Length: 112
Image 1 (cartoon, rainbow, N blue to C red):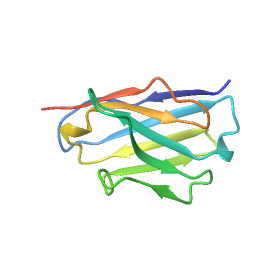
Image 2: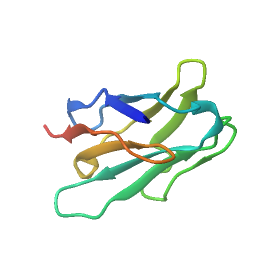
Image 3: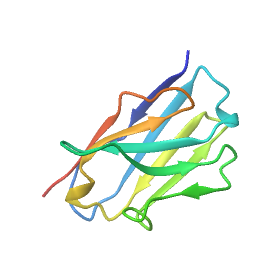
């Protein structure tokens, strides 16, 4: 059974940084692209980063490009999302998306 467990969220001041982690199990992690999405209250789900199976290629929407960095460690079955220069509008639940499911999410709140 595919399982994805996110961690690393929290309350951060504007301008701060966070590293989110997603531990994967139940599938051959290294064979699949992985993504991070976020959902803010009252807003649609938004893709914020995607990485290919080997980690050679990444995709970001314009809204986060330059501030978000996705990476993965296939030896640890883990994908990461580094978020810099956090803004209040980054406040959302961040989800790790695998080939068939997503995790429970981790809350990121940006506030002074």
